[in-house]
Image 1 (cartoon, helix red, strand yellow):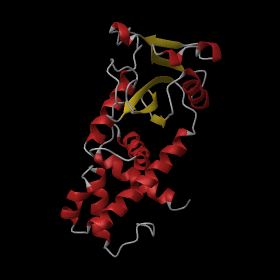
Image 2 (cartoon, helix red, strand yellow; image 1 turned 180 degrees about the vertical axis):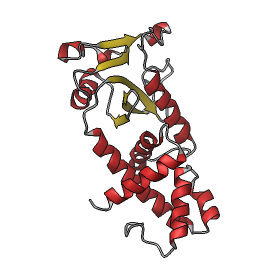
Image 3 (tube, helix red, strand yellow; image 1 turned 90 degrees about the horizontal axis):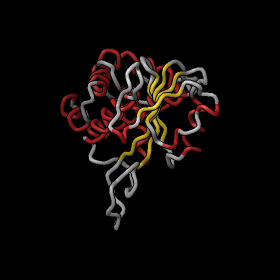
Image 4 (tube, helix red, strand yellow; image 1 turned 60 degrees about the horizontal axis):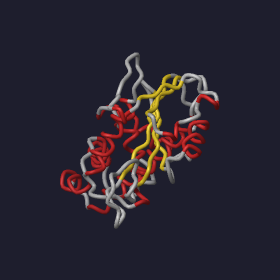
Length: 229
């Protein structure tokens, strides 16, 4: 498969490890199913994730256009001690903010951000999304002023008023569906340290809406590309 996956195991077992990874079977279960020690499985899984991460970062450098949805979400569950108010936009928590871009009928990309302020989000949007795009967001003030910087077709839904769609395609259901998928999937790890969270987040981008066969074929291609870097 590659020298980056150094282990004295046969090709059949290597293929089985990849199959289990694409099926999203965890390392503990894979150890039992393949008959390879946990240390080796962990090394394979980590290298798969490193390759996927590099691939997703490369893909994110391509300009996004067409119909595009923006949204931000917060990952983690730790509350700030002493805060007793209603939680909004991660307020009162130590949750990690993440910004997401969804190209309808196409790719989804995420970026771990220090905050969700207008300056932070606008810089990411300007660097990633064509101004000719039709863009959709919720009413968060971080998206104010996009028309002023060239996004003439910016449509918004106001979640504060329980508005989730205005019809005619004005919604952000796609990116919100991705957030649900990512949080549901990451929950099974019972917490992730900061240095591996980004790897798992990019893996979620890559996995979303793909079946096992598509994941297998793509992973083989990604590994071939990655080992040539």
